[in-house]
Image 1 (cartoon, rainbow, N blue to C red):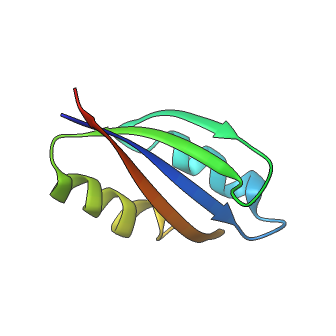
Image 2: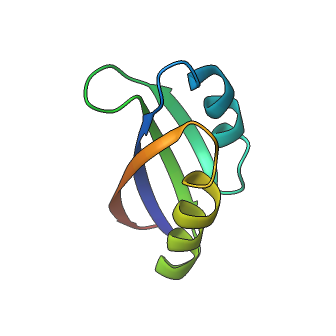
Length: 77
C-alpha cells in the first residue's frame, strides 16, 4: 500500500464543486483546504504506483475545476 499527498490547484469559482467530488473518490483518506500556491491537499492510499497514477490522471485531473496537480509519495504502508 502506498501513501501519497496530492497537491491540487483549482479554478477560481469552482472550488465548491470540485472539493466534494475529490473527497468521495476511492482511496481518498482526507482533503484539507489550504492557502497559498495550492488550494487542496489530498491524502490518498493506493495499492501500487500504477493505481496511484490512474487515480491522479483519470479521476482527480478529470474533474471539472481541477487545474493542476502535484503528487508527493509518502512511502509504503
